[in-house]
Amino acid sequence: MGPRPDGTRARDGVPARFTLMYPAADSVRRDLAQGFTSDARAVGIDVALEGLGWEAIEPRMGTDALVLGGGSPFDPDLVSYPLLHSSYGGDGFNNPASYHNAEVDAGLDAARRATDPAERVAAVKAWQRAYAEAPGFVFLVFLDHSYLVRDNWDGYEQVVDPHTHGTTWGPWWNVEDWTPRS
Image 1 (cartoon, rainbow, N blue to C red):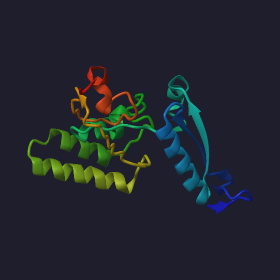
Image 2: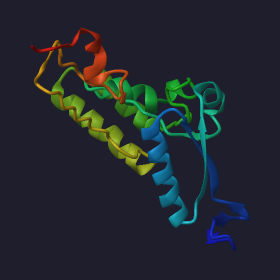
Image 3: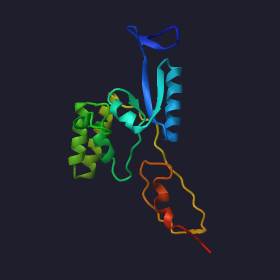
Image 4: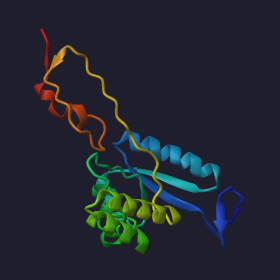
């Protein structure tokens, strides 16, 4: 795989080039997409960015790359299983790339069935090792949100923060109930 005159790597005349979509209204995913594109260009991979609405993204999820966001603070199975298990291949946001790895499937299934914590840990480690040997996604970042609230407000109720960011969730979930302290 050598570079072409424009600096893009190629194999058998096919340039290392793909499209990376991100939701246009999401500034965090836009910034991640731009950083990824810059790093890819540095190693000879040409990434065309497209900021789109979900109505344009969803029909292309099986053919073009997408900056996805997801997560659950409750149990890793809630995200890992539908993202990586082949039974979910091509099912919308569940495994949109149709990733398939029999060893990963077996480890995910074993972890899901395990009732003994040590057995579950061993199964999770097994599928993680199998995934690391043959990955299907590029994981960029784990966002850890930090929020500060002035202590002159009443009504804030702490909530477990899932993967969303901005003002749609997090500590803002009940902002209409906040009142200034006298």
